[in-house]
Amino acid sequence: MTQPYKNFVNNLSRVLELIRSPQYKGPLTGAFLFGGILFTIFTYLIVGAGEFSKTSVSLIAGGNTLGASTIYDKNTIIVEISGAVKRPGVYRFEKETRVGDIIDNAGGVLDTVDKEFVAVSLNIARIAKDGEKIYIPFIGEKERSSSIEGFVNINTATKSELESLPGVGPAYAQKIIEHRTQNGPFMTKEDIMNVSGIGEGTFGKFSDLISVD
Image (cartoon, rainbow, N blue to C red; front, side, top):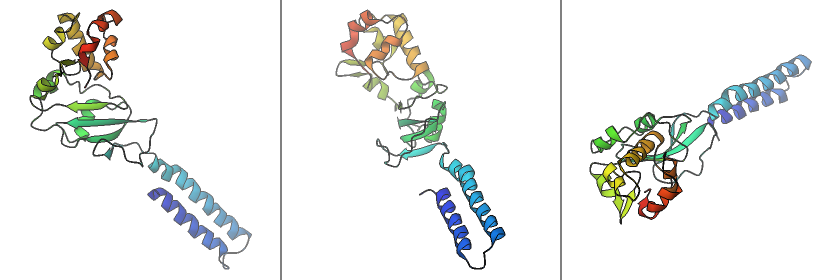
C-alpha cells in the first residue's frame, strides 16, 4: 500500500468517526462532514494519485531480473545497463531519456572503461529504447568479444572486422558502424538490413557468420 493511499484511508476514517459521534448531529453538521469526505477524496485523487504515478528514474533490480512489484507505465521505458559502470542494473526511466543520462544515473563509467569505445562508438545523445540493454565494455574487452567462435559481433566489431564479411567493403562497414552509433545496438541479425544498401542478397552472404551478442 502506497503512502498516499494510507493517508487517504486514515483521513477518511477520522471523518467517519466524527459522523458517528453523538455531538455531531444535525443537518448543518452532517453537510459539513459530508463536505469533508468529498474534500478528502478530492485531495487523494489530485495529490495522492499523482504521487503514485510519478515516473522519475528508479532502480528496479540490481541484477538481470525485474522485481515482482514493478509498475509498468506507457510513459516510461525499462532499460538494463551493465559493464564498466558504477551501478549496473535494470532501471525505469521516462520516455525520451538519452543514453548519457542513463549512464549518469548508473553512477557514471569506471576508470577501467574502454575509453576508445566511449569516444568513438558510444552515442550518448541517442534516445534509449524500451527493453534495450546498454553494455559499456571494459578496457580491451571489445577486441576479445568482437569475434566469438568465428562469428563477427556486428555490435562491437571494428571496421576491419566488418570488412572481412563477404559482400561488406569499407563503405558498408562504415555505414554499419554509423547506424549502430546513431540507433543503438542491433537486436537481431536481421536488423542489419536496416542499414542503407544492405538487402536480403547481401545479408544472405554473411548471415551465418555474424552474431549480435
